Every structure is written in structure tokens, then in C-alpha cells.
Length: 347
Length: 279
Image (cartoon, chains in turn red, blue):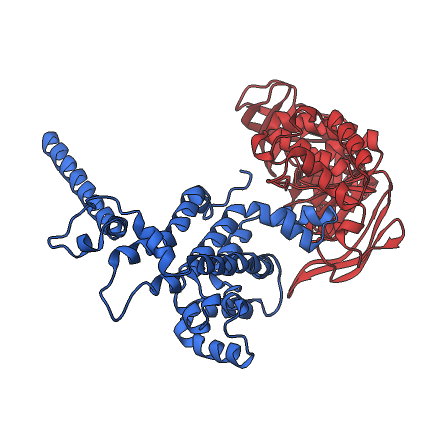
């Protein structure tokens, strides 16, 4: 188990600055997920922690030891790659054993660890196969076993589930959570998929353009976004933002699941008409045309298509953002301003 | 209309077939003629009109070759030279191809251009300075003079570089995280992955050195260091009547080991040009 600390980390390729000044603390034993859109610097950050990428500035500490100049193999880190990166000419056993042999671990100990790990991930009967003769899911397990068997201080994963089909991905998510609980090691996981991040992490680091936008637990990230970017990144459909009505270029945000298809008492009520209706099974997604633009709504209520409704959102479900998109407190003054513009509570 | 198309198709296919057969015949006939002549009597080789197949198989031609020249010495020399060239060249081309494919360094394009230049400059331009160098170093008539000039093989570096470039970077990164050194990555990961290419390169370089006539001719003057092609050439008698049956028997002896090698490794050679990782 180990904590990781990135201090004033910079990364540039030639003149292109990818990460300007990154400060990040990863708690000992946490399951931390770095999430963000493609090119936001999350994979680069992970690769800098592993040592596969050099730093252009700043320091990285693992357990208070500065590791800037420590080669990847000596950092006591394991990594699972997106494409698994198995050694194609080696059998499953040799793939798993390679790291242990390089660490000069005695043969008996190696055999014991391999059989333990293979038991856990269910690979025992495939030990003598070559990776080419395994399915995608089995290759994924070999990659996990290869990482686990080294008993590392830190376990890194770079989009490890993105090559699996939807069903297997859901199953592997549960297995990874269990694995983290069992190993108790620090997990650092990179993904662009907010569902993966929300379902597995106990700490989420949301990144954009090489910067950390918000770092918090999944619940906090969802219910308490610190800016429009976070509010819209997490959740599907994304948070509604009404822009252009409030004074001082303030913006009003609320999640689709908080939109009611009937008037509410402590909130705003806006006339709307249902434009489209997507049946998802347990819930329905409506797009509503309002005088202030299109608003998405997620509801269990089954309404007819193309009917006129009064759309209601309670004050307690609203987020207020400033002109710079940063979250503002939703105080009495804000409530009055919102009521004045969008029409107050229903009488 | 459909009938006419069918007839046209069949005609084209026939023409295609005849063309291919003709090509095969052009390629294979000299080989066939060599084998046929190797088993004829001297009188039959000179007979007109020539016979396609020998009247009776003259195995004695082969024993005559052994009696005329020191096949044993030449064969030993050829094997020593070829084996050492093949082994030593791996020590040059594998690290060179690895660094040119998987490392970023400032002078990389310049080094690669240098390698390619080595491939492009014909031997006729370089042999004289190399000859003088070896001569001044007193290395004429040594195995080194026959081996050292061929251990760096630009085509080998190029082929292996292309092959290594197809290996995903993550595989090497995974090995780094597994605490493997560059040497270990090269030997344990890259070389097994490039097995077909390495076998092909070995084979190509073995064959080209086995058949090399010019270089051993200028670098050796003693019988003890001469290779098989020079020995076979000694069967030609400039002053007297050419004993074509012996010359062809000698050539057959020269070419048979290579033919055997090719048949054994032909599948690997075809695979060498295709990357076979995990899909």
C-alpha cells in the first residue's frame, strides 16, 4: 500500500504543453479514477507515475520517496494496458512469471504465487496456452494476473475494460472492485467513461486540458459539482444549463432527473411541450421545448408525446454558475433572481 | 452474350496458364540442365544434338570432383565463414534494428540514412578500400577477412526494423514495468517475436555468403582458406577441354545444401514478411 503525490508536475512535447502544473494526492489504499475526455492528460499522468513517461518539471513521490529518476521496473508498480500488452510468444504461465523472474524471486515462491493468482482470476486450466489462443476476456485476466502476481505497492490500469463487450465489462467492474477490496492496494485507474468512474472509484479525479477540474468521491462529484464542466460530464443525459436569462451572465443548471412534468411548490415552473420521448425501460427520457430552449428530462412518468406540460424544478435541485462557469452559492438572493426570471412557485 | 463471355474467360485463363508455365520453364530449365549434365559422360555433354536426359547415370562424376579438388577443405571453409557471418551479424543487426525502431534519439534519421546508404552503394565501389584496409592490417588469407565485411547487413537492419516497428510499444513498456533490461527485452521479447524474420535473414545471408565468389577470390590466395565456389571454379580448365559434367556435378554439390535449407525453411521465409502478434 502506498500514497502517491504529484507536485507541480509539468509535461510538454516540444512546444506543446500537455500538463501545465498538476498537483495531485492519491490516498494510500484508495481506488482513484482519473477521468476525462480524450487528450485531457489522464493517460500521460498515469504514465508519468509509472515512469514510462519522463517529467518536464515537478516531482512525483510514492510513499514520500521521490521517484523521478527511478526506472519503471523499480517503482513497485504494476500496470494493465488497454490492449493488455501480453508477450505473444510466451505461454500464460511465462507471461505471469516474467516479472517475478526478473525480480529474482525463488522458483517455489513463484510457483506458489502463480497458482494463487490463477486460482483467483480463473486461469488455472489455461496456463500452458499462448495468448493468441485465448478470448478477449481471458487475455484481460492474464493481464490482471500478471499485474497482481508481483504484489505491487500501486496498481495502475489504463482503460483496461474498453476492449471488452458491454456484458463482460459490467462483470469485470464488479471483479475489479472485489479485487481492490481483497488486495487493499492503491489502485489508479484511467478511463474516459464516467459510468466506470462513478461505479468503481472511491476517489474521482476529473481532468480537462491537463488540469484537475474536481477531485472528490463519486457522490460528491455528482451532487456537488464545482463548475459547469463537472456538472455536465457526470450524468446522462447531461445537466441542463439555462443561459442568457439571469443577470450578470449567471447560468442555471439542474439535472434531467430533477425535472418534474408537473408544477412544483418550492421551485420554478415553466410551460413546455414534449418534443421527443425515449423509452429506456425503467425510465423515459423526454426532450422538452421551453421558451428558454430545449430541456432534457428523465422521469418514470409515462406522458403522451407532443403534449403541453408545465415543467417544474425545485430550488433544492438547482445549481447556479457564474459567468466564468464556476459554481455560486444558491442563497436567498439567487432564489429571488431565479424566481423573478423563470416564474416563481405555483400558487 | 453470356456464352461469349464464358469462352473469353476460359481463353484468358488458358493464356494465363501458358504464360506462367513458360516463366517456370525459363527459370527451371538451367537448373534442370545442370542436374542432367552432372550425370552425363563427357562424350555425351559434347554430343550434337544434345540429349535432354543422360543415357546412364554417371555417379562417378561426383567422386571425380572429390578427386580433382579438395572439397573437404573448401566445404569446411565455406561452413565456417557462413556460420560465423550468420551468428555475428545478429549481434549487429538486432540491437541496431531495435534502437532504430523503438528509441528516439537526435541523430536517428542520420544513422538510418547511413544504414540505407550502405545498402545502396554497390560493392564494386567499396571493395577496393576494404581490400587495402585488410591488406595493410595483414589479414589477407584469414577467416576474418572473409567474415568481418559481411557481419553488418544493411538489408537485415532495414527488414528487422520494419518488423520491430510493428510490435506494439505497450509490450515493451510492460516488460520495462516487469523490470526487464533492454538486453532482456531484446532477447526474450523482440527476438522470439521476430523469429521468422531472423531465420529468413540468417538464411539469406547464409546463401549469399555460400555463393559468394568474388570476395573470397580477392581475399585469399592459399588453398587452405578458399571456399567452395572458388574450388568449384577450379574445375574449369582454361587450357584444355572443359569437363562440363564435372563442373555441373561440382555445382550441384554447391547448390544442394542451400536447396535443402530453403525447403526446410520456406514457410518461415514467407511468414517473415507478415507480423504475427495477437489480433
